[in-house]
Structures are given as structure tokens and as C-alpha cells.
Length: 181
Image 1 (cartoon, rainbow, N blue to C red):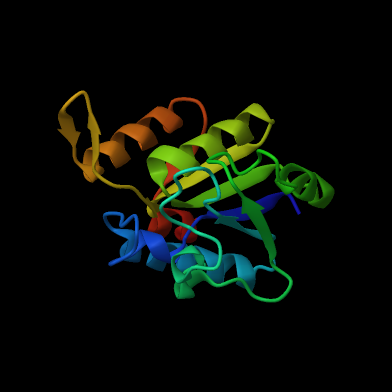
Image 2: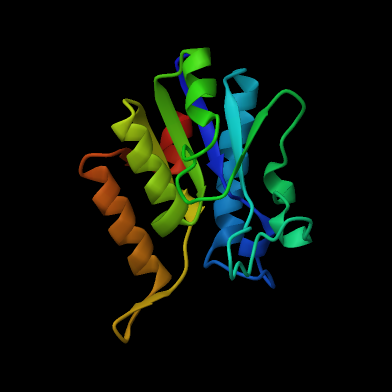
């Protein structure tokens, strides 16, 4: 099996009334759900990445809190790998690399949240580790950001990060395009 679906941090705190609400989280999760159904149908490897906020000052994904739970739209099924992480990069201090290598995976299809943080860090690390990556842009979500007093809307953050990844680190597609191939 040379291809796997990676679902990064689609957790309750990113949704409406969560501790770190993202713009478009529900729609992104619906697209992840479509991708998940396709990979399940094809019996291809699926990895759910589950972030826990345990560092000093953590305000979301707190262990044991409902906000840290994987969202109902993409709950893992029996036999699907779940990787617990504590950093933006899903490979850092986890068994993700060993798991994928053990399956002979060469290509990763990456979805999830937040585009500007964990999707970016995971995709760049994966490419540096030798994987071919496809990021499903509309199966990812982010939020408004601020830098040096300038406000950056989530749509602009999303576009900028996807564009940056597409220059070397990943092929960027939308759900409909990927599923039609």
C-alpha cells in the first residue's frame, strides 16, 4: 500500500463554541469525511492524528476535555491508526514515520486543521522525510491571524499557506478534484 490518508487534529475545540474556533471548520470536516469514506471504501491506510495540549499555558485540546476529542464527522473506526501528538509536526516524538514505513507508504494525502500550523508543519516534515504529499485544501481550515498589528483574514491565511506548500512541498487539490481522479 503506497498511499495513506492523514487526518490531522479534526477536534471539537476547532468548531463552533470551541476553545480555538476556526473559520470553515465544519465544511472542512465534511470534506475530510468524504475523503475518509473513499479511503475506507478502497481499504487504504488511514491515520488519525490527535493533538493534546499539555504544555505550559495550554488553553485548548486539554486532556480529558470534550474539546480535545476527535470530531464526530471523522471518528476513527476499529483498525484505523491513531497517533497522539503534542507538537504541530505530526512526526515529532510519535510513531507516525515508523507506522507509514512499515506499511510501505510513499504518498500521503493530508487533511485537517490548522492549515497554517499543523498541516504546514506536518506536510513540510513529510516531504523532508521523502514522502510525496497531496494536501486537500478544502479539507483543511484555519483562522484569522495578526502580525505586527496587521489583521490577516482566514481566507488569506489559507490561500497563502496552500500556495507556499504547493511550490515544493505538496500538490494542492480540492476534495471534488481528488475524488474524481
